[in-house]
Length: 85
Image (cartoon, rainbow, N blue to C red; front, side, top):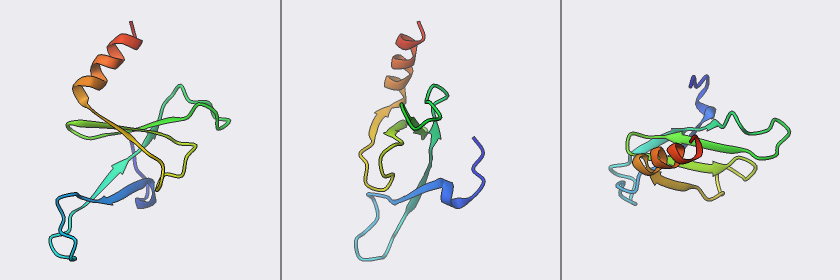
């Protein structure tokens, strides 16, 4: 996926960062929409991949407040194996 501008990324502060402004780590997720999602705003699923985790969200929700589902990559691969069979 090509990210053309920084606004395409969703930034968050790592849970390993301290709360007093020191040792702050910012991480960005690059979200991409499923090719099976409709263009009319219907069934929209987006994922962001990391080396050990796949993050999943409903793109119809507010991206800064909507819940996300995070699963290990091994669980995601098993899921894909079942739905592609």
